[in-house]
Image (cartoon, rainbow, N blue to C red; front, side, top):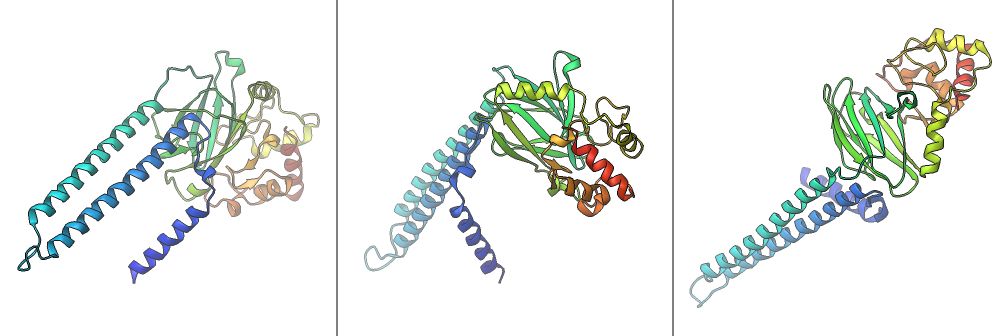
Length: 328
C-alpha cells in the first residue's frame, strides 16, 4: 500500500514542477546562477546515468535469455562487455559531475572582488538581527528581518547565531550557509537588478522555524545611499512625549529606538519600524490592524516566540500602534 501512495505523491510533485514557471528556478545573481546551472547539469547527468545503466542492464538480460545456438542462453561475455561499457560511461559522467561541483564551490568562495557593503546578520529564535558596518562608526546602525542592498555589487554577510543553529538562505541570490553559535561564517550575495527576494531559515531551529523568514530588498546604488542616510536619522514621530513614555515603560526593556532613552537589546531595534514590510519576521504584513493584533496577543500569532504577553490596555495598544507605525 505504501508504494502506490509514494508513487502518487511523486507524480503530484512532478506535475507541480511541470506547471511552475522556469523563471522561479533561475538565479538573480552570479552565485545563484552558478548553483542553478550546477543543479540542472547534475539533474541531466543523473538522468543520463540512470538511462544508460537501465538500458544496458535490460539489454544484457535480454541477450542472456536469447538462445545463441538453439541449445542454451546467449553469450555471457558479450553481456558483461556491455555492462563494462555502461560502467565506464557512467563513471566518466559521475567524475565530471564531481569536478563541476568542486569548481562551482570554489567559484562561490571567490573574494577577488572587494565587498561594497558588509552586514552582520545574527539569527535567533525566531528573527534576524541586521547590522550595517562602516569604516566610520557613526554611520553604523541596526535593523531587523529585512536586508537592503545595492544592486550590481558583492555584499559580504557575516553570519552568527545567538542561540541554536540556524541557516541563512536566499534561493534567488545565493546558496545556504549555517549560522553556528560561537562561530562567524561568511557568504557573498549579489543581485543583478532591483527587486525583493525572499529568504528563509533552512535549518530546523525550534517551534517557529517555519515562521523565520526575511526579505532582501535590492535597490539602485543611488536609492540605497539615500536609504542608508535616512536610517541614520533619528526616528520620526517624536513630537508628543506621551507615546514615547508608553513605549519606554512597556517596551523599552527589550527594544530600542534611536533618539529615545530605551536601550533594550533582547528584541529587534524598532527605529524606522513603520517603513518595514512585515511584522514578526514575515508572519504578518506591517499594517496598523496587524500590529495591534500582534501587540494584543503575540503568542496567538507566533506561539513560542520570545515576545511576551504584555497585557496592554486598549488605549495603550492604540497609542503604541500609532506611534510605531509613524516611525518611517
